[in-house]
Image 1 (tube, chains in turn cyan, brown):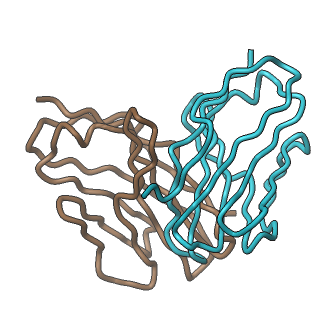
Image 2 (tube, helix red, strand yellow):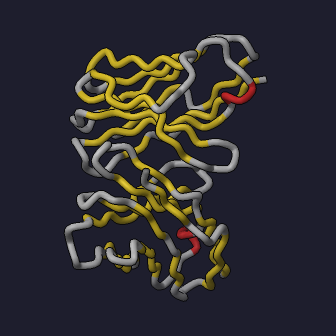
Length: 111
Length: 113
């Protein structure tokens, strides 16, 4: 009965590759988010979707492309991976402006 | 733009004692929420407590309580009867009109047996 799930939990890949991270929530929430946590543990919003529509895009390089096929899913595709993309990526969901619930995170390592 | 500041990079507390983690924020909005999240070594982000800005009463959740001073833009977290399982990184976060959470830099709490 996991609320917010992400796959994979760990991702190790070479520079220049393309990879995707998937997120699913079973809480019935209408808003989903991607956050990035860097090596110093700083968390920053990347994107937010409400009812499948993009509502926040925080000046993220266009190598990052989120996609929301439905309200329960928000995927993150990253093209041409760079060393600086190494981080933990968190998916989260909320009902409107209420509390955000986070997934377990995906640790991406770019070699 | 809103900002969140946690001025204590690390804190330490003895088991069963009380510790207070500090957080200040800056905003011109009148309607907002404040949160404390806990991140243990498992890296899961766990909600500890939440406060609505319009509520004067401080939020409490079992051993966790906040001291919300709206005029001073201060939102500290008090952990009573500290337990070994409380050891984690604690993040203060602001949620306003844009729906995104703005996080502080975190406070790493160690609990000494």
